[in-house]
Length: 252
Image 1 (cartoon, rainbow, N blue to C red):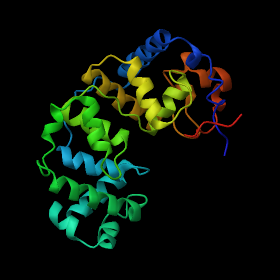
Image 2 (image 1 turned 135 degrees about the vertical axis):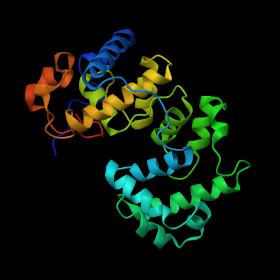
Image 3 (image 1 turned 90 degrees about the vertical axis):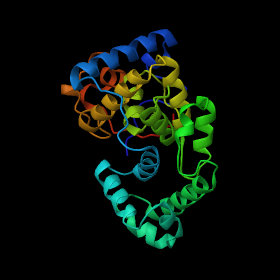
């Protein structure tokens, strides 16, 4: 597999620029994507626990398979019934999601911890908890990383966080708003460049997701029709032959 770009230590031109310039570039990206995909209203798409479990299922999984796995999971009964079910049965129910044998015990343990917590399955307390504490509380749950936690906090509670999934990470690395880095570092780096405005953060996340699915794909990106190409590091270096993207930084 061809790895995209240089190592973390030698970022492409945009990523090597001062934070103020990269913030301005990211604002330009947001404006271009808004013009291309439209404005997005921040409103919860699901109730918080649904969002949490669905996002665990979504890891390395398409949206359609995530939704199918979630709906099949709920056929096992309420949350208590899912906890009590044999783990193999839960894994079978979520088989449309990748790595169901790993996700099933994590989902059961997450639900078990929530059930036994003071608020039970109600996550409403996250609305008022300091953001740093809310992120830690969520990421302490099995199978919940910073992306999943950020999605729940932004989508359900309008908290000023910025979820970085594979599409968000790929586009920003190719454009050069950030250098090659790991998931948690990318969350911190991008959030530092963005205004703490949940509607803006939500719209940018959703539009980057759409652009990553439709244009700036993992392999064979459609640079010819990309609205970001005029300021994209990857396009400047490779033209329309931008290679496949690896989430891990390439070795020198």
